[in-house]
Each structure stands twice: as structure tokens, then as C-alpha cells.
Length: 167
Image 1 (tube, rainbow, N blue to C red):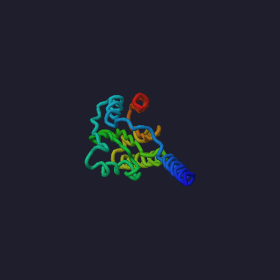
Image 2: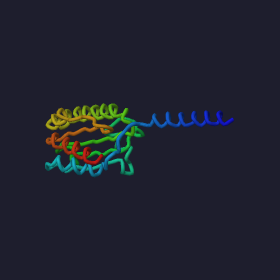
Image 3: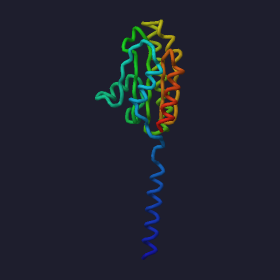
Image 4: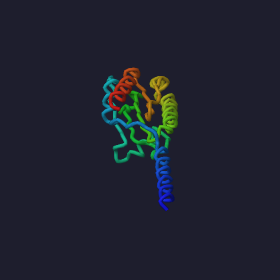
């Protein structure tokens, strides 16, 4: 009888261990607000930027404006965008997904968003369409990032530095 109980316990531990191995793989998500401040500072310029994030009451609705990925797949996000779209196409979006396996989909959704905005600006504010041609879109760990900024290199460096220092 003791052998049967021992075998059952071993099987239960093995099942629990296997279930634990199937958890989504990701790093700890940094403070999106603090990250947005670092990236905004690197963005600089005269453009007044508005802020939206996963902490807002209408977060899912706002998120749908920049990404088509299922909102339930996101851990957190923020959007910095030019308050006056006629004056600037500047925009910074960072999406942290819950499961790293979804980060490529998040990146693809940001690329589609940039293309949609490019097409809109090409029709209504052509002088800003070129900024979207130079959009920087990339992934790092669980983050998908889109940067539309005249200082995109500095903004990307601010992202890299912040996420490296706040793991």
C-alpha cells in the first residue's frame, strides 16, 4: 500500500511540475509610466504629447486605436501621441505582452497601425507622412515598441537603457 501511495504522490508531483513548465515565459514588466517619462524626455522637441495607458479607465478602447492584438494578451501599455495631429505625427507606443510568444503579433499590429496612420496623413497632412515612413518598430523581451520621432535613436536608447536598468 505504501508503494502505491508513493507512486501516486510521484505522479502528482510530476504533473504539477509539468504544469508549472507551461507557464508563459516573460520578464518582469517595468513601470510603464516611468518608462514613458524617460522616452518622452529623449523625444524632446516642441510637440505637446498626450498620454494614455493600461491604467486608464477606458484602456481597452484606447488600446484598440493602436493595436489589433487581443487586449487580454497585454500585460501593460502606454501611448504618447501628438496632442495636435495637424502639427505633428509623433507617437511612441510600448506594449508589454503577458506571453513572449505574442510579442511578434504585437509588433505586427504596430506596423499595421503605422501604415494606417501613414495612409491617413498622406491624404490629409502629407507633410507628416514622411515621419511615419521612418517609424522605428522593434521588439525586446516582452515589449513591442513603435517610435515616430525626429529623435528616434535617442528615444530607442532611452527605452533600452531603462529596461536594462529596471529588470
